[in-house]
Length: 413
Image (cartoon, rainbow, N blue to C red; front, top):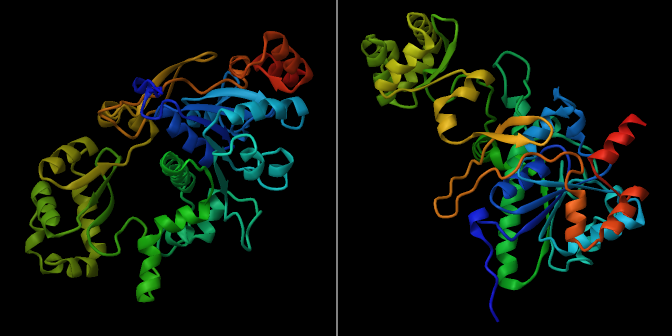
């Protein structure tokens, strides 16, 4: 019997179908990466939709958080509170390899999305549940987001100036780290299923993702009994390391984790600090860090940030500008890496989204389609599941499914 080989020109995950039944960031963004890698990712939403469709800045009614996080997907609206919607979901689940959800109990089971319920439709399904703190245990069932995980996991206590208050990490890094664990878990389980024929349930939490990232900081306490203090922009282990102001008012990061880099910094700045006993070793520089930072800040004011970067890069110094979003969007290396991609959105026209952070050379990946409109592919996907045009029309009429037209009508009602 011949084996059908997927068209890998679509990406290494061609032939894999993923159901994104999560909202906001951690779950959906894990599905997004799998879509970038070639999987057929279908975002299943209610008539309300992903919460990120209702938050943040908008452009012609479409919100930037959703547009930023949901590329490389098709979208369908199914109302799982209706029997016809659950029947359509059963057909869809039977054709899928991976399901990702972050819905909490009791809603999870009421909607028929618990692992055992989904497994009835596809026995070898890979089911991934994302929670804030864990699927069981003393915090199970609590609502939670990135900010709370930062508190529980110790990140807030580490971030900020030494004498100031704890400061939230603005970018939702724990959500993003969790999304990477979601995609890693899915790929690992697919590999296992190839070998055993068995799917499985997988639980991933924001708290565990942060503890994974905290290995070195928490390890200092677990192994040596010493909590890691807040250091602001400085390093706990070497100096100089900080943010310095240039003559044009822009700022630059300079860090020297070793004698070589400090010598290179002095050469690049054309100063003789290597001859100063206060700065002759890492330990002495840490002891005199305030004075060293003052001298560096004073010298950096002799250059624009671009001139400083050119000078220090030539001297092989670890340095970077402190870029805002505008500078990031036009940075030549970021553009070269394909990390800003322009797509043709069906409503907005050209939109820019972030690109694929993994660069395959044998089976190249790409952002394959723009974030879907709410219910954009409902008719298309239902037809793929065997529904006739008349049956699709009935599902839409009864509210068991919806297209953008039905969603717009409901908003205006």
